[in-house]
Length: 196
Image 1 (spheres, rainbow, N blue to C red):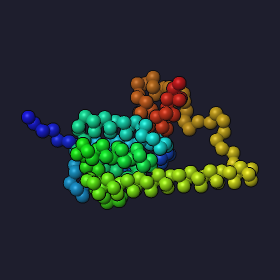
Image 2: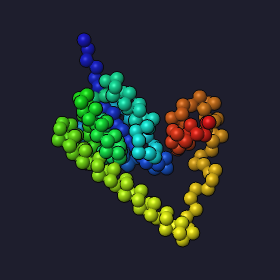
Image 3: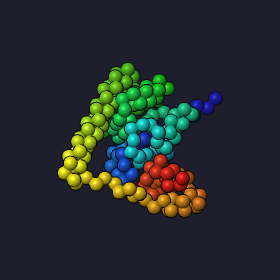
Image 4: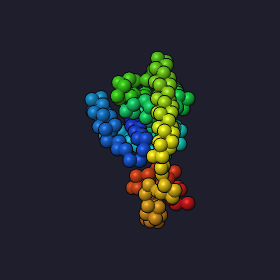
Protein backbone atom coordinates (compact mmCIF):
# COMPACT_ATOMS: atom_id res chain seq x y z
CA UNK A 1 0.00 0.00 0.00
CA UNK A 2 1.39 3.41 -1.01
CA UNK A 3 1.40 5.98 1.80
CA UNK A 4 -0.02 9.31 0.67
CA UNK A 5 2.15 12.35 1.42
CA UNK A 6 0.19 14.77 3.57
CA UNK A 7 0.18 18.49 2.78
CA UNK A 8 1.05 21.52 4.88
CA UNK A 9 -1.96 23.77 5.36
CA UNK A 10 -1.43 27.50 5.87
CA UNK A 11 -4.36 29.23 7.54
CA UNK A 12 -4.58 33.02 7.38
CA UNK A 13 -7.37 35.13 8.82
CA UNK A 14 -7.78 38.89 8.77
CA UNK A 15 -10.45 40.45 10.96
CA UNK A 16 -12.02 42.73 8.36
CA UNK A 17 -12.49 42.55 4.61
CA UNK A 18 -10.48 45.76 4.22
CA UNK A 19 -7.37 44.28 5.87
CA UNK A 20 -4.63 42.76 3.78
CA UNK A 21 -3.16 39.33 4.50
CA UNK A 22 0.18 40.17 2.79
CA UNK A 23 2.18 40.65 6.00
CA UNK A 24 1.02 37.31 7.45
CA UNK A 25 1.72 35.59 4.14
CA UNK A 26 5.24 37.05 3.85
CA UNK A 27 6.25 35.82 7.32
CA UNK A 28 4.75 32.39 6.73
CA UNK A 29 6.49 32.09 3.34
CA UNK A 30 9.81 32.94 5.01
CA UNK A 31 9.18 30.22 7.62
CA UNK A 32 8.19 27.65 4.98
CA UNK A 33 11.32 28.36 2.92
CA UNK A 34 13.49 28.17 6.04
CA UNK A 35 12.06 24.71 6.74
CA UNK A 36 12.45 23.59 3.11
CA UNK A 37 8.73 23.19 2.52
CA UNK A 38 8.09 23.64 -1.19
CA UNK A 39 5.07 25.44 -2.69
CA UNK A 40 3.81 22.10 -4.08
CA UNK A 41 3.49 20.80 -0.53
CA UNK A 42 1.37 23.75 0.67
CA UNK A 43 -2.38 24.43 0.55
CA UNK A 44 -3.48 27.98 1.44
CA UNK A 45 -6.71 28.81 3.31
CA UNK A 46 -7.57 32.52 3.71
CA UNK A 47 -10.54 34.00 5.55
CA UNK A 48 -11.44 37.70 5.48
CA UNK A 49 -14.19 37.89 8.02
CA UNK A 50 -15.20 39.50 11.26
CA UNK A 51 -16.49 37.21 13.95
CA UNK A 52 -15.45 35.15 16.90
CA UNK A 53 -16.89 31.82 15.82
CA UNK A 54 -15.41 29.17 13.54
CA UNK A 55 -18.14 29.60 10.92
CA UNK A 56 -15.71 30.76 8.22
CA UNK A 57 -15.58 29.41 4.66
CA UNK A 58 -11.82 28.75 4.40
CA UNK A 59 -11.68 27.33 7.93
CA UNK A 60 -14.48 24.89 7.04
CA UNK A 61 -12.52 23.81 3.94
CA UNK A 62 -9.44 23.30 6.10
CA UNK A 63 -11.45 21.18 8.56
CA UNK A 64 -12.72 19.05 5.66
CA UNK A 65 -9.15 18.44 4.49
CA UNK A 66 -8.08 17.56 8.04
CA UNK A 67 -11.01 15.14 8.31
CA UNK A 68 -10.06 13.59 4.95
CA UNK A 69 -6.53 12.98 6.24
CA UNK A 70 -4.74 15.06 3.61
CA UNK A 71 -3.17 17.55 6.06
CA UNK A 72 -0.06 16.75 8.12
CA UNK A 73 0.73 20.20 9.47
CA UNK A 74 -1.12 23.51 9.97
CA UNK A 75 0.85 26.76 10.01
CA UNK A 76 -0.55 30.09 11.19
CA UNK A 77 1.00 33.53 11.66
CA UNK A 78 -0.24 33.76 15.24
CA UNK A 79 -2.34 31.46 17.42
CA UNK A 80 -5.25 33.93 17.65
CA UNK A 81 -5.67 33.74 13.85
CA UNK A 82 -7.19 30.31 14.49
CA UNK A 83 -9.56 31.58 17.19
CA UNK A 84 -10.00 34.28 19.79
CA UNK A 85 -12.36 32.08 21.80
CA UNK A 86 -10.57 29.87 24.24
CA UNK A 87 -12.95 26.89 24.04
CA UNK A 88 -13.08 26.89 20.20
CA UNK A 89 -9.31 27.20 19.93
CA UNK A 90 -8.46 24.52 22.46
CA UNK A 91 -11.04 22.08 21.09
CA UNK A 92 -9.88 22.53 17.49
CA UNK A 93 -6.19 22.34 18.34
CA UNK A 94 -6.65 19.29 20.59
CA UNK A 95 -8.58 17.48 17.85
CA UNK A 96 -5.85 18.24 15.33
CA UNK A 97 -3.02 17.19 17.62
CA UNK A 98 -4.87 13.96 18.48
CA UNK A 99 -4.96 13.21 14.73
CA UNK A 100 -1.17 13.61 14.61
CA UNK A 101 -1.22 17.01 12.93
CA UNK A 102 1.66 19.31 13.72
CA UNK A 103 0.57 22.89 14.52
CA UNK A 104 2.98 25.82 14.25
CA UNK A 105 2.62 29.52 15.04
CA UNK A 106 5.26 31.41 13.06
CA UNK A 107 5.31 34.74 14.93
CA UNK A 108 5.31 33.05 18.33
CA UNK A 109 7.99 30.62 17.09
CA UNK A 110 6.27 27.70 18.73
CA UNK A 111 5.29 24.18 17.73
CA UNK A 112 2.22 23.28 19.79
CA UNK A 113 2.60 19.51 19.53
CA UNK A 114 2.36 17.43 22.70
CA UNK A 115 0.93 18.00 26.16
CA UNK A 116 3.08 21.06 26.95
CA UNK A 117 2.04 22.57 23.61
CA UNK A 118 -1.65 22.11 24.49
CA UNK A 119 -1.10 23.71 27.88
CA UNK A 120 0.67 26.76 26.42
CA UNK A 121 -1.96 27.03 23.67
CA UNK A 122 -4.69 27.09 26.33
CA UNK A 123 -2.96 29.97 28.06
CA UNK A 124 -2.48 31.91 24.81
CA UNK A 125 -6.08 31.32 23.71
CA UNK A 126 -7.22 32.64 27.10
CA UNK A 127 -5.10 35.78 26.65
CA UNK A 128 -6.48 36.28 23.12
CA UNK A 129 -10.06 36.04 24.38
CA UNK A 130 -9.30 38.47 27.21
CA UNK A 131 -7.77 40.97 24.73
CA UNK A 132 -10.84 40.68 22.50
CA UNK A 133 -13.20 41.38 25.41
CA UNK A 134 -11.08 44.32 26.59
CA UNK A 135 -11.11 45.79 23.06
CA UNK A 136 -14.90 45.47 22.92
CA UNK A 137 -15.28 47.13 26.31
CA UNK A 138 -13.06 50.05 25.24
CA UNK A 139 -15.00 50.39 21.97
CA UNK A 140 -18.36 50.38 23.78
CA UNK A 141 -17.07 52.98 26.27
CA UNK A 142 -15.82 55.16 23.40
CA UNK A 143 -19.15 54.92 21.59
CA UNK A 144 -21.00 55.81 24.79
CA UNK A 145 -18.86 58.94 25.26
CA UNK A 146 -19.24 59.90 21.57
CA UNK A 147 -23.02 59.45 21.75
CA UNK A 148 -23.19 61.60 24.88
CA UNK A 149 -21.22 64.33 23.09
CA UNK A 150 -23.45 63.99 20.00
CA UNK A 151 -20.53 62.91 17.81
CA UNK A 152 -21.42 59.27 17.19
CA UNK A 153 -23.48 58.67 14.09
CA UNK A 154 -22.90 54.97 13.46
CA UNK A 155 -23.46 53.45 10.06
CA UNK A 156 -26.23 55.09 8.08
CA UNK A 157 -29.32 52.87 7.71
CA UNK A 158 -29.30 51.03 4.40
CA UNK A 159 -25.59 51.59 3.72
CA UNK A 160 -23.62 48.69 2.25
CA UNK A 161 -19.94 47.79 1.92
CA UNK A 162 -20.18 46.90 -1.77
CA UNK A 163 -22.65 46.91 -4.63
CA UNK A 164 -25.29 44.15 -4.20
CA UNK A 165 -26.13 44.34 -7.92
CA UNK A 166 -22.52 43.42 -8.75
CA UNK A 167 -22.78 40.40 -6.43
CA UNK A 168 -25.84 39.21 -8.38
CA UNK A 169 -24.02 39.71 -11.70
CA UNK A 170 -21.01 37.74 -10.47
CA UNK A 171 -23.33 34.92 -9.36
CA UNK A 172 -24.96 34.95 -12.80
CA UNK A 173 -21.45 34.72 -14.29
CA UNK A 174 -21.00 31.45 -12.39
CA UNK A 175 -18.79 32.54 -9.48
CA UNK A 176 -19.11 30.76 -6.14
CA UNK A 177 -20.11 32.64 -2.97
CA UNK A 178 -16.49 32.57 -1.81
CA UNK A 179 -15.23 33.96 -5.13
CA UNK A 180 -17.87 36.71 -5.04
CA UNK A 181 -16.82 37.63 -1.50
CA UNK A 182 -13.18 37.84 -2.56
CA UNK A 183 -14.05 39.94 -5.62
CA UNK A 184 -16.14 42.39 -3.58
CA UNK A 185 -13.85 42.24 -0.53
CA UNK A 186 -16.78 41.31 1.75
CA UNK A 187 -17.52 38.35 4.03
CA UNK A 188 -19.38 35.19 3.06
CA UNK A 189 -22.41 36.21 5.16
CA UNK A 190 -22.51 39.63 3.44
CA UNK A 191 -22.58 37.93 0.01
CA UNK A 192 -25.49 35.76 1.15
CA UNK A 193 -27.33 38.85 2.36
CA UNK A 194 -26.73 40.66 -0.96
CA UNK A 195 -28.05 37.70 -2.94
CA UNK A 196 -31.16 37.16 -0.78
